[in-house]
Structures are given as structure tokens and as C-alpha cells.
Length: 200
Image (spheres, rainbow, N blue to C red):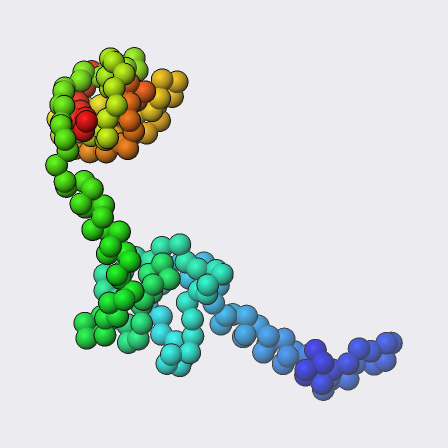
């Protein structure tokens, strides 16, 4: 307890004032430890968490972040970032050039899917526990569209002849950029009717 003015002693006599200093120092240390916050007390708080200064303290940091935060409302005086991108607020200036390339890509994708195919062949396919191809014959198509109806009772698994791991749930739609539907296999855990369309 050098902070209390005490030093190590050998076989010297311990005087009353030294002993009293030891007792006082122990009382002070006990008071500090008794008033300190225990980890168990932080598991469930019955009070607000207010920092001692405004706009100084952090909650987490870039290398050690909280996994999830659950709250009803959030009020931010400055900026908010989601996945490294700043969230735009009402009144913020919008720099359009940042979105041009992304918008072009989106438009190209929309045009590619919306434009009318040369021909569209549709069919209903009963899928069971044994994998079956989407087509019994080899054919060349531009795209394959698969839709699982909302009333389906089982999941649909898509893949090749040896493994089907991609899952479609009821109400799901999937477009495959594959040329031969005979190489696409589907299965389920029970009998399910799905809708298939080929753009040829």
C-alpha cells in the first residue's frame, strides 16, 4: 500500500499510527470494491445508460462490434452507415453519378427478363422423392423458369443428376440461365406439382 505511505518492513516494531493507516487503507479499498459494478449487475439493467460526456464515448468499435442491437426507435444527429454506405436522409444532396452504373445494370437486367421470348413452352411437372429432369429430351433454351405453387406441401430441391441441394419453397420462383433443361434435376420429399417454362 505504497499509495497510503506504507513501506515494507523487516522485523521492526509496528507502531499504532502505522497499523491505523493499514486499517484505513483497507477500509478505503473495501469501499471501492463494494461500490464497483459487478458483471452480473450488467446483465439486466433497471436504469438508462447515459455517457458522462456528449459525443465522446463509443459503443463497440470497427474490430469488435456488437452482433445485434434490438430497439424500438433510433435517433441520430449525424450520419448512419449500413454495410459501409451512408444512409441518405431527407434533404441530403443526391449525387446521381454514384448510381448511374448500378442503374444501367438494373435496366439491362429488367430488359433481359421483360422482353418477349421467341417462343415459350410451359408444362406442369410432378416431382417426387426420386430426382427427375425438367425435360425428357435434349433441347436448347435461353432460360428456364420454375415456379412452386403456394399450396405445395414440400420443398423442391434443384441440382444435377447426382446432387440436388438448391432449395425452393412454396411461392418461390427461379430463373435458370441454362441451355439444356434435361440436365436440371428436381426432387422433393413428397409429390409436388411445379410449373416450368422454357424460353426457346
